[in-house]
Image 1: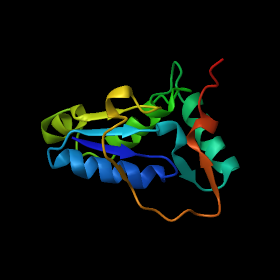
Image 2: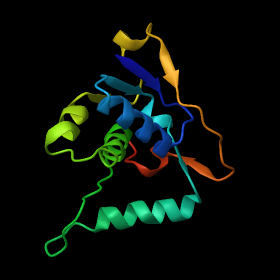
Image 3: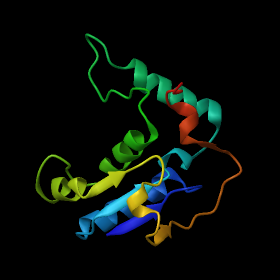
Length: 134
């Protein structure tokens, strides 16, 4: 089992690394999903998320992106990097992936892998675009 600490890591790089490991047959757990970075200008990223959320409706069809928690958005990004998540090896790999906002107690003592990345000057944390929990 591989445990990945996603704190201050770029979403796309984490997603591609996790997808590759899951396709190899490893069980992968991603922790600290609320501290993942989305690179780019904050205004354009926010506009993109809001367009995806407004896309669902009676006549519109497409992926519904609600103001879900960070682990759901992370898992959706990973799913996009798998071959076909509905059947075959993509489905098997997708079932081996778990995502958590914080570090659960069973993974506190385990060794965590940090996906190396270089921070860009323009970035935002993923939790800035999700629902604010009271």
